[in-house]
Length: 116
Image 1 (cartoon, helix red, strand yellow):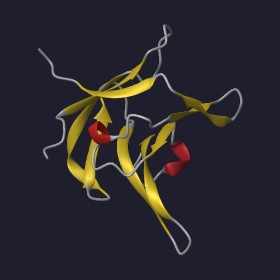
Image 2 (image 1 turned 180 degrees about the vertical axis):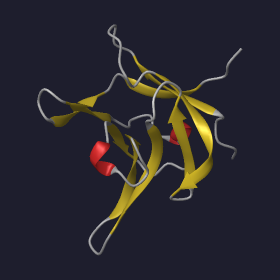
Image 3 (image 1 turned 45 degrees about the vertical axis):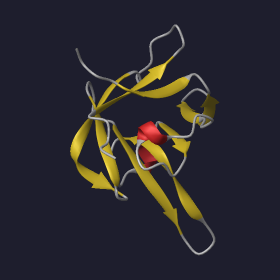
């Protein structure tokens, strides 16, 4: 399956969100999955695998760098091969700076964006 050439993260809320916009497919991969960059800022959308003695699995992250999990602004726990294959039941967790923690946001969805 060929990954979507661009992926759009949509927030269905009426307010604007830094996460809204087009993430364009880059010519690189991480964890054997595609990597996307936001069209207006340096955020990346990519998969991060959790590997260790007691756990396995992973998540799709929006972060400033592939090796910078400390800058993660949102994530969805799912091992999908690309963002378009995320489970329909997946919940995105968005960092709330006011509360200094991640909070679930069921309004966020990922769609394949085709420019006309």
